[in-house]
Amino acid sequence: MIRIRRRIIQYALMVVLTLIFLFPILWTIISSFKTEQNIVAFPPQFVPEPFVISNYITVLQRFPYGMWMRNSILITLASTLLVLVLSSLAAYAMARLEFRFKKILFSVIIAMMLIPIQGYMIPLFRMLNAMGMRSTPELSLLSLVITAGANITSLFILTSFFKDVPLSLEEAAHIDGASHFRIFAMIMLPLSKAALSSVAILTFITNWNQFMWPSILLTGARNLTLPVGIARYFGGASADAAFRYGPALAAACMAIIPTIIVFLALQKHFVEGIASSGIKG
Image (cartoon, rainbow, N blue to C red; front, side, top):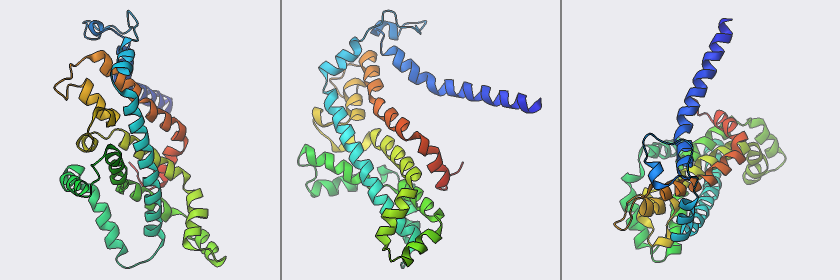
Protein backbone atom coordinates (compact mmCIF):
# COMPACT_ATOMS: atom_id res chain seq x y z
CA MET A 1 0.00 0.00 0.00
CA ILE A 2 2.82 2.37 0.90
CA ARG A 3 4.55 1.57 -2.40
CA ILE A 4 1.37 2.39 -4.33
CA ARG A 5 1.03 5.72 -2.54
CA ARG A 6 4.64 6.60 -3.30
CA ARG A 7 4.13 5.76 -6.94
CA ILE A 8 0.98 7.88 -7.09
CA ILE A 9 2.83 10.81 -5.53
CA GLN A 10 5.73 10.38 -7.96
CA TYR A 11 3.44 10.35 -10.99
CA ALA A 12 1.49 13.33 -9.65
CA LEU A 13 4.71 15.31 -9.25
CA MET A 14 5.82 14.30 -12.75
CA VAL A 15 2.52 15.49 -14.19
CA VAL A 16 2.75 18.81 -12.34
CA LEU A 17 6.35 19.40 -13.46
CA THR A 18 5.46 18.44 -17.04
CA LEU A 19 2.60 20.96 -17.07
CA ILE A 20 4.88 23.65 -15.63
CA PHE A 21 7.46 23.10 -18.39
CA LEU A 22 4.87 22.75 -21.17
CA PHE A 23 2.72 25.73 -20.18
CA PRO A 24 4.94 28.44 -21.78
CA ILE A 25 5.06 26.47 -25.04
CA LEU A 26 1.31 25.86 -25.07
CA TRP A 27 0.64 29.49 -24.22
CA THR A 28 2.91 30.62 -27.05
CA ILE A 29 1.11 28.40 -29.56
CA ILE A 30 -2.34 29.49 -28.37
CA SER A 31 -1.43 33.18 -28.32
CA SER A 32 -0.01 33.03 -31.84
CA PHE A 33 -3.60 32.55 -33.08
CA LYS A 34 -4.95 35.57 -31.16
CA THR A 35 -5.30 39.18 -32.14
CA GLU A 36 -2.87 41.68 -30.67
CA GLN A 37 -5.55 43.02 -28.30
CA ASN A 38 -6.50 39.57 -27.00
CA ILE A 39 -2.87 38.58 -26.38
CA VAL A 40 -2.43 41.37 -23.81
CA ALA A 41 -6.01 41.24 -22.52
CA PHE A 42 -6.69 40.71 -18.81
CA PRO A 43 -8.00 38.34 -17.67
CA PRO A 44 -6.18 36.21 -20.28
CA GLN A 45 -8.10 34.15 -22.82
CA PHE A 46 -7.14 30.49 -22.93
CA VAL A 47 -9.15 29.88 -26.12
CA PRO A 48 -8.47 32.23 -29.07
CA GLU A 49 -11.60 34.22 -29.84
CA PRO A 50 -11.51 35.08 -32.66
CA PHE A 51 -9.16 32.44 -34.08
CA VAL A 52 -6.84 34.19 -36.57
CA ILE A 53 -3.90 33.15 -38.73
CA SER A 54 -2.99 36.68 -39.76
CA ASN A 55 0.10 36.60 -37.54
CA TYR A 56 1.57 33.73 -39.58
CA ILE A 57 0.62 35.43 -42.83
CA THR A 58 2.35 38.62 -41.69
CA VAL A 59 5.55 36.76 -40.84
CA LEU A 60 5.69 34.88 -44.14
CA GLN A 61 4.74 37.80 -46.39
CA ARG A 62 6.46 40.81 -44.85
CA PHE A 63 9.75 39.25 -43.77
CA PRO A 64 12.29 36.91 -45.44
CA TYR A 65 11.33 34.18 -42.98
CA GLY A 66 11.81 31.43 -45.57
CA MET A 67 15.40 32.56 -46.16
CA TRP A 68 16.07 32.62 -42.43
CA MET A 69 14.68 29.11 -42.11
CA ARG A 70 16.78 27.91 -45.05
CA ASN A 71 19.93 29.47 -43.62
CA SER A 72 19.33 27.93 -40.21
CA ILE A 73 18.60 24.48 -41.64
CA LEU A 74 21.69 24.49 -43.89
CA ILE A 75 24.01 25.79 -41.18
CA THR A 76 22.66 23.46 -38.51
CA LEU A 77 22.70 20.33 -40.68
CA ALA A 78 26.20 21.05 -41.97
CA SER A 79 27.47 21.86 -38.48
CA THR A 80 25.93 18.71 -37.02
CA LEU A 81 27.44 16.54 -39.75
CA LEU A 82 30.86 18.17 -39.29
CA VAL A 83 30.71 17.68 -35.51
CA LEU A 84 29.76 14.01 -35.90
CA VAL A 85 32.67 13.36 -38.27
CA LEU A 86 35.36 15.28 -36.38
CA SER A 87 34.23 14.31 -32.87
CA SER A 88 33.88 10.61 -33.67
CA LEU A 89 37.36 10.45 -35.24
CA ALA A 90 38.97 12.40 -32.40
CA ALA A 91 37.08 10.41 -29.77
CA TYR A 92 38.24 7.10 -31.22
CA ALA A 93 41.83 8.32 -31.14
CA MET A 94 41.49 9.48 -27.55
CA ALA A 95 39.77 6.31 -26.40
CA ARG A 96 41.70 3.61 -28.28
CA LEU A 97 45.01 4.86 -29.61
CA GLU A 98 48.14 5.38 -27.57
CA PHE A 99 50.39 8.38 -28.27
CA ARG A 100 52.56 10.78 -26.30
CA PHE A 101 50.89 13.40 -24.14
CA LYS A 102 47.43 11.95 -24.81
CA LYS A 103 46.18 12.43 -21.26
CA ILE A 104 47.54 15.97 -21.09
CA LEU A 105 46.00 16.85 -24.44
CA PHE A 106 42.63 15.39 -23.48
CA SER A 107 42.70 17.24 -20.15
CA VAL A 108 43.45 20.53 -21.89
CA ILE A 109 40.63 19.96 -24.40
CA ILE A 110 38.12 19.14 -21.69
CA ALA A 111 39.27 22.15 -19.65
CA MET A 112 38.30 24.35 -22.60
CA MET A 113 34.67 23.52 -21.78
CA LEU A 114 35.05 26.01 -18.91
CA ILE A 115 35.74 28.87 -21.32
CA PRO A 116 32.51 30.41 -22.73
CA ILE A 117 32.37 31.70 -26.27
CA GLN A 118 32.43 35.27 -24.94
CA GLY A 119 36.02 34.64 -23.83
CA TYR A 120 37.37 34.05 -27.33
CA MET A 121 34.72 35.58 -29.56
CA ILE A 122 36.63 38.77 -30.40
CA PRO A 123 39.93 37.02 -31.34
CA LEU A 124 37.98 34.48 -33.40
CA PHE A 125 36.11 37.26 -35.19
CA ARG A 126 39.33 39.13 -35.96
CA MET A 127 40.95 35.96 -37.26
CA LEU A 128 38.03 35.15 -39.57
CA ASN A 129 37.93 38.75 -40.77
CA ALA A 130 41.66 38.69 -41.53
CA MET A 131 41.20 35.46 -43.51
CA GLY A 132 38.49 37.10 -45.62
CA MET A 133 35.79 34.77 -44.34
CA ARG A 134 33.34 37.67 -44.03
CA SER A 135 33.84 39.10 -47.51
CA THR A 136 30.66 37.49 -48.85
CA PRO A 137 27.44 36.23 -47.20
CA GLU A 138 28.24 32.67 -48.29
CA LEU A 139 31.64 32.77 -46.59
CA SER A 140 30.06 34.18 -43.43
CA LEU A 141 27.63 31.26 -43.35
CA LEU A 142 30.54 28.88 -43.96
CA SER A 143 32.39 30.46 -41.04
CA LEU A 144 29.53 29.53 -38.73
CA VAL A 145 29.76 25.91 -39.86
CA ILE A 146 33.54 25.72 -39.47
CA THR A 147 33.60 27.30 -36.01
CA ALA A 148 30.82 24.96 -34.85
CA GLY A 149 32.94 21.93 -35.74
CA ALA A 150 35.07 22.23 -32.60
CA ASN A 151 32.53 20.75 -30.19
CA ILE A 152 34.15 19.59 -26.95
CA THR A 153 30.96 18.23 -25.40
CA SER A 154 30.48 15.84 -28.31
CA LEU A 155 34.10 14.73 -28.04
CA PHE A 156 33.65 13.97 -24.34
CA ILE A 157 30.43 11.99 -24.87
CA LEU A 158 31.86 9.86 -27.69
CA THR A 159 35.19 9.29 -25.95
CA SER A 160 33.38 8.00 -22.87
CA PHE A 161 31.28 5.72 -25.06
CA PHE A 162 34.21 4.30 -27.05
CA LYS A 163 36.06 3.51 -23.82
CA ASP A 164 33.17 1.26 -22.77
CA VAL A 165 33.20 -0.80 -25.97
CA PRO A 166 34.74 -4.24 -25.20
CA LEU A 167 38.39 -4.34 -26.19
CA SER A 168 38.01 -7.95 -27.37
CA LEU A 169 36.13 -6.78 -30.46
CA GLU A 170 39.02 -4.56 -31.51
CA GLU A 171 41.59 -7.26 -30.75
CA ALA A 172 39.73 -9.78 -32.89
CA ALA A 173 39.64 -7.31 -35.76
CA HIS A 174 43.38 -6.66 -35.39
CA ILE A 175 44.05 -10.39 -35.62
CA ASP A 176 42.11 -10.46 -38.88
CA GLY A 177 44.37 -7.71 -40.21
CA ALA A 178 41.97 -4.78 -39.91
CA SER A 179 43.44 -1.29 -39.73
CA HIS A 180 42.44 1.30 -37.16
CA PHE A 181 40.27 3.15 -39.65
CA ARG A 182 38.50 -0.05 -40.69
CA ILE A 183 37.86 -0.92 -37.04
CA PHE A 184 36.49 2.56 -36.52
CA ALA A 185 34.24 2.41 -39.58
CA MET A 186 33.10 -1.23 -39.39
CA ILE A 187 32.90 -1.83 -35.62
CA MET A 188 32.86 1.37 -33.61
CA LEU A 189 30.43 3.41 -35.67
CA PRO A 190 27.72 0.70 -35.95
CA LEU A 191 27.94 0.15 -32.19
CA SER A 192 27.71 3.85 -31.39
CA LYS A 193 24.37 4.68 -33.00
CA ALA A 194 22.87 5.62 -29.63
CA ALA A 195 25.76 7.90 -28.68
CA LEU A 196 25.87 9.47 -32.15
CA SER A 197 22.12 10.11 -31.98
CA SER A 198 22.55 11.87 -28.63
CA VAL A 199 25.37 13.97 -30.03
CA ALA A 200 23.31 14.78 -33.13
CA ILE A 201 20.33 15.96 -31.07
CA LEU A 202 22.42 18.06 -28.68
CA THR A 203 24.46 19.57 -31.50
CA PHE A 204 21.42 20.30 -33.67
CA ILE A 205 19.54 22.06 -30.86
CA THR A 206 22.63 24.01 -29.76
CA ASN A 207 23.45 25.26 -33.26
CA TRP A 208 19.80 25.92 -34.08
CA ASN A 209 19.45 28.20 -31.05
CA GLN A 210 22.77 30.03 -31.51
CA PHE A 211 22.21 33.77 -31.28
CA MET A 212 25.20 35.81 -30.10
CA TRP A 213 27.84 34.46 -32.50
CA PRO A 214 25.63 34.54 -35.66
CA SER A 215 24.37 38.02 -34.77
CA ILE A 216 27.98 39.28 -34.83
CA LEU A 217 29.11 37.35 -37.88
CA LEU A 218 26.13 37.74 -40.22
CA THR A 219 24.93 40.89 -41.99
CA GLY A 220 22.05 41.61 -44.35
CA ALA A 221 18.38 40.84 -43.74
CA ARG A 222 18.29 37.79 -46.04
CA ASN A 223 21.47 36.22 -44.65
CA LEU A 224 20.38 35.90 -41.03
CA THR A 225 19.50 32.77 -39.12
CA LEU A 226 16.11 32.35 -37.44
CA PRO A 227 17.07 33.39 -33.88
CA VAL A 228 18.87 36.49 -35.13
CA GLY A 229 16.12 37.42 -37.59
CA ILE A 230 13.35 36.97 -35.04
CA ALA A 231 15.20 39.02 -32.43
CA ARG A 232 16.16 41.75 -34.89
CA TYR A 233 12.81 42.23 -36.62
CA PHE A 234 10.29 41.02 -34.04
CA GLY A 235 11.99 41.59 -30.72
CA GLY A 236 12.87 45.26 -30.98
CA ALA A 237 16.62 44.64 -31.41
CA SER A 238 16.79 47.15 -34.25
CA ALA A 239 15.57 50.72 -34.49
CA ASP A 240 13.00 49.92 -37.21
CA ALA A 241 11.42 47.02 -35.29
CA ALA A 242 8.03 47.92 -33.85
CA PHE A 243 7.35 45.12 -31.39
CA ARG A 244 4.17 43.13 -31.92
CA TYR A 245 3.39 40.06 -29.88
CA GLY A 246 1.38 38.20 -32.52
CA PRO A 247 3.96 37.96 -35.32
CA ALA A 248 6.75 37.37 -32.80
CA LEU A 249 4.91 34.41 -31.26
CA ALA A 250 4.03 33.02 -34.68
CA ALA A 251 7.66 33.23 -35.79
CA ALA A 252 8.78 31.50 -32.59
CA CYS A 253 6.24 28.68 -33.06
CA MET A 254 7.45 27.94 -36.58
CA ALA A 255 11.07 28.10 -35.43
CA ILE A 256 10.72 25.17 -33.01
CA ILE A 257 9.28 22.75 -35.61
CA PRO A 258 12.64 21.45 -36.96
CA THR A 259 14.02 20.74 -33.47
CA ILE A 260 10.87 18.80 -32.57
CA ILE A 261 11.17 16.75 -35.76
CA VAL A 262 14.82 15.90 -35.09
CA PHE A 263 14.14 14.95 -31.48
CA LEU A 264 11.18 12.73 -32.37
CA ALA A 265 13.21 11.02 -35.08
CA LEU A 266 16.13 10.22 -32.76
CA GLN A 267 14.53 10.10 -29.32
CA LYS A 268 14.61 6.30 -28.99
CA HIS A 269 18.42 6.46 -29.02
CA PHE A 270 18.77 9.63 -26.95
CA VAL A 271 18.35 8.32 -23.39
CA GLU A 272 20.31 5.17 -24.18
CA GLY A 273 23.16 7.19 -25.62
CA ILE A 274 23.38 9.58 -22.67
CA ALA A 275 23.23 6.70 -20.18
CA SER A 276 25.98 4.76 -21.96
CA SER A 277 28.31 7.73 -22.42
CA GLY A 278 29.17 8.25 -18.79
CA ILE A 279 27.02 11.36 -18.21
CA LYS A 280 24.97 10.60 -15.15
CA GLY A 281 22.92 12.81 -12.89
